[in-house]
Image 1 (spheres, rainbow, N blue to C red):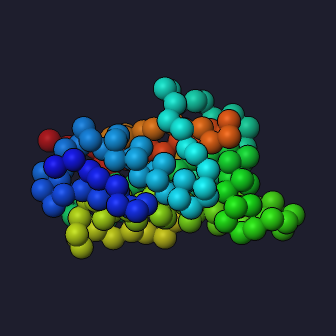
Image 2 (cartoon, helix red, strand yellow):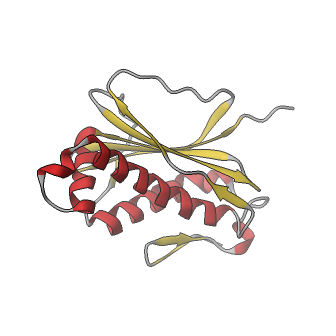
Length: 173
């Protein structure tokens, strides 16, 4: 069956779970879930774009690891402008929310919500979600040895870039 939206949580039929999950549908799941979480949490549109932009300037990146019946990592990356906008909406107006800790908290929470909803698509109770890890800067590299991209979607929100990527360990034969 096709995934359906229920409130802001994308749900898949039981037969779509790990083992029978159609990995070709992961791009769609990542796209729909990311947009639903962003739009419901922030009240702002998140529009898919055609290609993944090269990061430039300061970015904020959140990671959550999913382990158990399925193993992988969800990476949520956005410009500092998008992260500040999220912090402003989530924590209210004021200069205090321009600070790095609120920006990191907002990105960590968005990463956690997208990852948690994705985890529920992948397994009823057979997967666990790590605490979010957040990285911020303008000149950094993150490498996950042996990982392969299974879904990636670029978006814009108020002209600010957002990219969501789902990685899994490369399969060895």
